[in-house]
Structure formats: C-alpha cells, structure tokens
Amino acid sequence: MCISLFLISLFTFVELNCENLFDCVHDSLKNDYEFLPQSERSWTKDKFWRKINNISRELISCGENTESSDWRLPDMMALCEIENDSVMLDLTKRSLLRNAGYEYVVTNSADARGIDVALAYLPMSFSLINYISFRLPPMSGMRATRDILYASGIVSDGDTLHIYVVHAPSRVGGEAKSRPHRMHMARTLCRAIDSLRVISPNANIIVAGDFNDYFTDSAVVKVCADESLTNISCKAKGRNGALATYRYKGEWNSLDQILLSSGLYKKVNSCKINDASFLLEDDKKYGGVIPKRTFKGYRFNNGYSDHLPLVLQFN
Image (cartoon, rainbow, N blue to C red; front, top):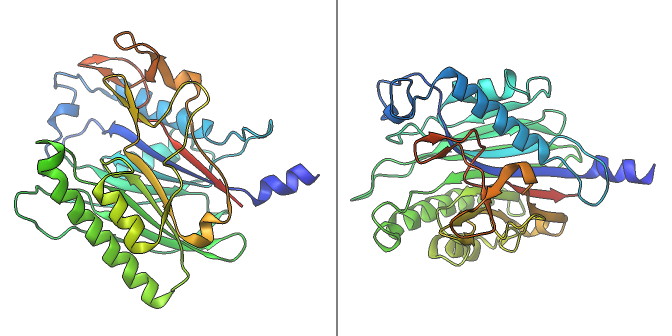
C-alpha cells in the first residue's frame, strides 16, 4: 500500500529528440524532399508507421520505475524533430499509444525543413491552461529555426507547472560560427521566462529539449545562470552503457537538457537516461553501444532515434 501511494505521487517527464519524425506527404512550403516516397530514402507509409510505433515503444518504456517493479505511462513528454500536427495526431491517436489518452500541443515553426517541437501530456496528470509559441526574431546569417513552445497547466497537487520546449539552431557550419544563433535562442528564452516571473516570481519551471549544445556551453550556461535554473540532466546516465543521450565518433555527450527552477529541483526523485537494450546496437567502428537510429546512411535500419530519452521523476 505504501508503494502504491508513493507511485501515485510521482510525476514522470520525458524529453526526446525523435530524429526526423516526418510524415511521407510533401508540404509545398517546406524542404521535406528527403522524407518522401520518391526520395533516396524511399520514405514510404510502411517505414513511417514502423517509425511511429518504434517511437511509441521507446516512450512507453520510459515509464519504468527502476527502484521497483512497477510501471506507469509517462505523464508528460517534450518531443523534438516532429514535422507537424498530423504526425503528433498519428503518434498519440493512431499508434501503440492510441489507448493512453495523450493530448498534445505543437508549434508551427518557420523552420525551412518543417521541424517543430511538441508537448504531449496525460490530462489526468496535467490540466492545460495555456500555450503559445515564441518565434526567434530574425538575426543576420541565421536561417529560420524552431519556435520555443511554452505551456502551463495544473498538476495533481494543485500547483501550476510551466514548461518551455526548445530545439536550438543546429551546428551547421561549425560550432563556433553557429554559436551566436544558439545564444540568440538563449536570450529569447530568458526574456520569456523573465516575463513569466514578473507575474509569478516563484513559478515552477521546466525547460527541456535539444539545445544543440553541451551543458558546459555558452547558451545552456547563460539560461541556467540568468534564470537561476539547475541542469538536472547533466550527470544523467543509463544502465546499459549510455553515458549521455548522444554518441558521436565514439564519444558520449548530451545535447539534450532538462533545466529546473529551485522549487521543482527540491522535489526531484531521479533523472536518468533510458538506454533500454532494445534502443541500442553495437558500435562496430568505435566499440561499445550506440543508439539504434532509423537509418544508417541511406539504409533503413528500423531503429528509433540517434538520441536517447531523458527521464525525470519528481514528487
């Protein structure tokens, strides 16, 4: 009985970059040609639905409580590299998650490829009040990128939770050359949080997403320092060999981050990486394991994502 009551009080939050979760229909306003049936990847409906259900399995597996044998669905999921609303509809209403009851909000960004961010949630755990997208103002040399998604709602204990989902500008052209673009995102995010704190100084805040930066890099450091947030994910590890959410040329590092306000940080139960064995495969070039991604080059690999999920549980 005590275990059951404890589990009911846990709130599970997941962050995942889904790696090119595109549908296979062309959007005439976007450069999505790489993920169409006639493309070099032959992105067909069959491959799309395999990908959708694989992502569903990955998210479902994040509900495991490693401290016991109990399991429950994640209460909330911040998702990056989602193409559009129709993909989120398929993921929440037509995939293996269809009976879970998830609702969602998603951006409609100006990103050239059509990439968006989304937030899925269980209405019994989170009652949505409001959501809005923040578009990054134009900056010299920076192409259109993903909006920042903001959502607020009431959780089961009556507190209001404020969530910002980000997918920062990429490192295309090199880390140093593209760094000002991510700093531009960081300043935009800080202004949004500052505006919230004028109204609610002690707001419970989660910032989550793919920063395209490591936790020691300028944009992440700025957001944490300026907004008094704690990076709860910087030391997160998996149980099956993952030392971070992303592996490149044999090196583990996390581009994915979860930042918390002080009130939420005090309630943290755990923050880990979900590296369930089925999400991994052998890294034949560098040794060890690597996330099992959807493609290897242009060969369909029937995998999940090149990123692993971060799983945060708080009371």
